[in-house]
Every structure is written in C-alpha cells, then in structure tokens.
Length: 518
Picture (cartoon, helix red, strand yellow):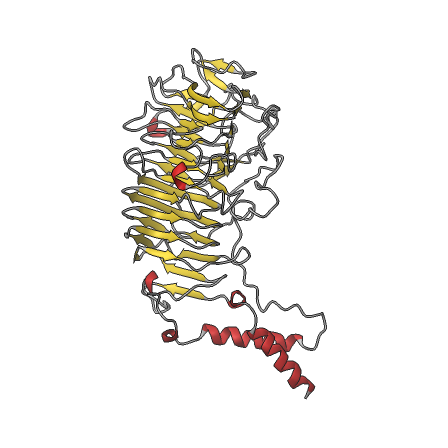
C-alpha cells in the first residue's frame, strides 16, 4: 500500500511538471519519418521543442514563430541532412517570441524582410540569407532584444538607401542592456543600402568578413526617433574587433564605416575599432571613418589600412560630428600608407610606409594575411590602452580568432607580440569565398571567441542579458522530469520508469491530435 501511495504521488508530480520537461521534436519534410510537410502545419510550440526541417527541400515562407521558449530551454529550428530552403512571404521567417535558435537554414525571397526579428534571445547560426529585395535581416525598433548572428552568410539583399542586408535595433525600454553580436559572418554583394546597419544599444562586431556594400560596410548609430525610444534612454556603444572590410563593387569609392548617426538617430556613444584590416578601393578619396551627428568618443587600435594597388588612404571625416563633450579621439599602433590624410594627431606609435606586406590585394585572390617580413608582424599592442577620459565598457581586449574569407574563422595564435590587423603571421590557410557550410555537424561557438584575454570575455552587465553572447553556443537541454532524488532512494527507479513512460507516450501520440496552426 505504501508503494502504491508513493507511486501515485510521483505520478501526480510528473504530470504537474512544466511542459518544457517533455520537449517534443517535430520533423518536417517528405520522408516517411516526417510529421508535417510545411511550417504552417506545426502545432503550438513550447520551451525545449525542436523543429527539424529535412534538407534539400523547399518550404513556404511567411511563417511567424509566436510561441516562446525559455532561457534554459530555447526552441530550436534547424535543418537536418543538408540545408532546407525556406522562401517567399512578406517576412520569410518572423521571430515574434523570445528564446529561439535558428540554424542550418537557407532563407530567401521575403518581399519585405527575409528574417524579421522582434523578440529577445534570438540566435541565427550556420545559415544563409540571400536575394531579399528589401531587408535581409531586420531587427525592429520595438520588442527586440539581444540577437546573435553566428557564422551567417548574407548576400544580394537590400536596395536604395533605406533597405540593408542587415539592419538591427534593440528596444531599450522593453529590453534594456540588449546586445547585437555578429561573429564569423560573411556579408557581401549588397544590392543597395549598407551591409550592416545597427541602432542596437550595444554592438559587438567580431571576426567577420564584410565586403561589397553599396554604401557603408558598417554603420553604427542611435535609435530612430520614430520608434519611440528617446535618445537619452541609453548610450549606444560599439566594439568592432578582428574584422576584414573590403570596399568593392559598383559604388566602391565610398566611406567604409559611419559612427554616430545618420540624420534620424544619434548614439551619443563610444566606439572602439581594434585589430581590423581595411582595404579601400583604388583611387578612393572617401574617408574610412565617417563621424556623423552625436557621439562621445572614438578609439582605433592596432588596425591596418591599405588601398588596393597601393596609395594613400583618407582616414577620418568629422565635419558632421557633434561631440557630446568635445572632440574625443584616441588610439595607437595603427599602420597607414605613406601620404595618408586626416590621420588623427591623437594616435600614438603609428607606423607609416609604402607596403604593409600583405599576401594579395587583388580582388581575384584577396588575402590580407601578413607575409614573412611584413611590418605589421609583432607590432601591435594587446590589450590596447584604456581611453581613460572615455573608457570603453567591457572591451574584447585580445582577439582569439581571425575571419575566413567566407563563413567561419581560424584560431589566432599569438607568438610573442601580437600583429597589427586581423591576422597573425603564420596563421592557418584562409578559405576563399567558402560560403556557409551546407549541413554537417554543428559546433557550438566557433573558434576562440574570447581569445583567452580581455577584461570581460562575456559582454553584458549582471549576467541577466547574456542570452545572445556568453551562452550563445549552447545546445537545447532536455530537463527530464525535473526531480532530483537522493542517492540510494527506493523511489528513483519508479520515478525514472514513470517519467520514461510519460515521455514515450507523449512522443507517440497520434499525429491527428496535433492540430495545425491556423
């Protein structure tokens, strides 16, 4: 009788557990193992659920994910056995609820946006977004929190001067402290607009290869006043470390980056640009850095600036800048070509010469790793000095990776003094235009994100807003029954048995019981 009572109590406890303890896997595709054919056929989702899309198959876009996961158990939507193609709709994929991971997907053709983000704790990984006539990946002004782009390729998106390949924002009222992190990505061949534009509260742009924008390769500014976020709600800061920027294409004689504002929103923020390699177009007189509207400070450390075919570079344009507390520029250990103009007088230990000694600056075989004997070898400084008048919060002090010319990266192993620019001499082979890997196993976080250094290898205050950063590489966990029995307890095998039976029964429910979403 006692055992029966214990059994009954345990059964009640198991049945009362949260739905996330019994996460389901739904398979979409055309095989005999598939539960459904299209995204529109899915039932409501719960924390920990996994949606698997069979690779090599076309799926209709225009789907809105509106059921929330949880921080501990995000909902995962992934391609398996190759990359599935999701195309069409006004918004091909819309992330309208928190805590999702999207991985190994091919997303295209959304007439308004290919990926529309207005939620918190969203990850897009190992995917490609392409051929979007307007926005490629868009984060809304409202309802958007932290997002991570990890090993994502974006190309042939955007148009005009207001649609971009990637356009991010965060809602500083709804999700204060949110972060847009982009790492190991390849953004190239934009149809118009900027390659990457962000109004997020904090931007972390690490180890990416960015090339071929019509306008700026990177534009980091403040919130749009039309979105209802007051400019004084938060200060927008940006850490840009270990990237390659290449100006090429039909409008290549244009500035590389713009910091501060665009006439519709100003950041009043701090900007840090370190260990990057910038390649400008032959004969271009446009400034690398275009400072615009309200900003507090800019610092540049251990970067390499070159022109294809050789020649001087215009470094800084600041006639449109509106400094919050007087001009604030700092930096050191940068390499610039002889004759370059508007080199900030505040920079220290600037190296100037005719040739940086990089492998190849021809577009057909561009490779910006240093050659043996290059002047950039063993000439950088890590960690860079703190800009004491305007210290940057939680910087990535020492890059642990370098970008591939494609998606992904290589470990940056430093021997002795760190090199200037995005690469160390003797680093591994640089895949050329590798594209996003199609299928295969997914590793979690990419190589060497924190590089074993830096004052804070995470990025967020208090640990509460780390969903898209410090824990970005996590895989979903199945919490089991959620009960922890004492070692040697006689109830343990009974608990395990009932939990197993319950989960098995739930997974074997008739498919007809899964009502399709309308």
